[in-house]
Length: 460
Ligand code: HEC
Ligand code: HEC
Image (cartoon, rainbow, N blue to C red; front, side, top):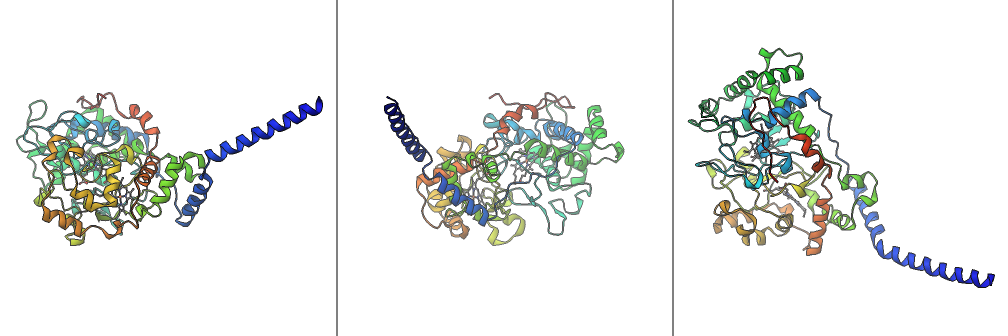
C-alpha cells in the first residue's frame, strides 16, 4: 500500500511538473532572448533614464498656475495658455492646428472665431520641459539656447535679462502673437471694451509686456501671488519676465511625467514591458533606425529634418499656404520643410501628430516615416483631418516632388517592416506613457483665477 501510494504520488508529481514546465516554457516563449538582446542594446548604446531636472519653488508654481489658466494674458480676455495646452488634453489641444483668440470651446469641440485664421502649427505637448538637455523650443527652434549660454529669440536684445530658463524665454512670445493671444487692432474684449494690447505695434515687444504687467498688477490677487513668489522684488520693480519665469515653473511642475514602463525597465524591472514593446524597442533602437533622430533620454536630437509631411493648415508667414519650417529661421535650403524632431514621452496620448497635425493615428505616422513617398502621394484628408481643414492640403505635384526629393536621407529604412513590426513599434511608443498623468489632471486645473475670468474645462 505504502509503495503504491509513493508510486502514485511520484508519477503524478512528475506529470504535474511536466505540465508546469511546458506551460511556463510556452508563456515565456522567447522572452529571455528578447531581454538579453535588449540589455545588450541598452548597454551598447548607453541608454539612460530621463533626469527631470530640479523641483520648482511652490510659491513660483502657484503664481505660474494662476497665470497659465488666466485669460487676462490675452488681449480679448478670451484665451489662456491652458486653452491650447490643457491638462485634460494632455498638455496639447487635441486639434491638428490650434485655434487662437476669438475661438470658443476646448479640445476637439473648439470652434474658430468669425473672420479668424487657424494657427499655422500643431500645439505640442509640454512634457518634461524641465530636463537640462533642452536647448530648443518651437517646431522651428526659433527660441534656442545658444552654445554660448545665451538665449536666441525673435526678441533679439529686447529679451529681458530677468529670464532664467529657455522655457521661460518661450513663454514671452505667445502673448505677443496677434492670432494666438493678443488679438487684432479694433478687437473688443469679452466685456465689449477696447483691446489695448492689440493697438501696440507688433514689433514693440517691451510695450506689450509692460501692458500685460499693468493688467496683472492692478489685481490684488496677483499682487499677493507675486509678493509671495518674489519676496525680494518690490512690486514696482517687477517685469513681465517674472511672470514668464513663474509660468515655466508651473509647466515643469505640472507636466513632468516620465515614470513610464520603459523607464521602469531601464531601472531593472524586466516585467515592466510587454514582449510586444520589447520587440518594438529592438526595432526602434535597431533596424527601424528611429533612435538616429529620436535619440537620448528625451528621444530627440533637437535637430531639424524634412520628412515630406503633407503640407496642411494655413501655412506660415510670406510662404503661406506653405510652411518652410526651419528654413524661415536660417535661410539655408537644407532646412526647407525641416522641423525639429519631437520628443516622444507620452506621445501615444498627444495626437494628432507632426508639426501640423497631419496624421490622426500613430500607425499612419510610422507608415509615413517608413515610406514617405507612398504616404504623401496617397494622403487622404478625409481620414486624418476635420472637415474645415481638408481643403488646406497642398497637393500640387511639383510641391510633392520637391518635398520628396529633399527628404532627409537618414529616414531611409534598412528594410521594409511588416505590419506586425509596425504594431511592435506602436507598443514601444505606448510604453513611453506615464499612467500618472490621468490621475493628476484634476489637481492641475484651478477652480478660479485672480482676474475672475472663466477657467477652461472640458466637458468630456
Ligand atoms: C492658440 C493656441 C496657443 C496658445 C494660447 C499658447 N500656445 Fe503654446 N504653442 C502653440 C503652438 C501652435 C505651438 C507651436 C508653434 C511653433 O512651433 O511654431 C506652441 C508651442 C509652445 C511651446 C514650445 C514647446 C516646444 O518644445 O517646442 C511651449 C513651451 C508653449 N507653447 C507654451 C505656451 C505658454 C506658456 C503659453 C501661454 C503664455 C502658450 N503656449 C499659449 C499654441 C498655443
Ligand atoms: C530622420 C530623422 C528621423 C527618424 C529616423 C525618425 N524620426 Fe520620427 N520624427 C522626426 C521628425 C523631424 C518628426 C517631425 C516631423 C514634422 O512634423 O514635420 C518626427 C515625428 C515623429 C512622431 C510624431 C511625434 C509628435 O509629437 O508629433 C513619431 C511618433 C515618430 N516620429 C516616431 C518615429 C519612429 C517610430 C521612428 C522609426 C521608425 C522614427 N520616428 C524615425 C524625425 C525622425
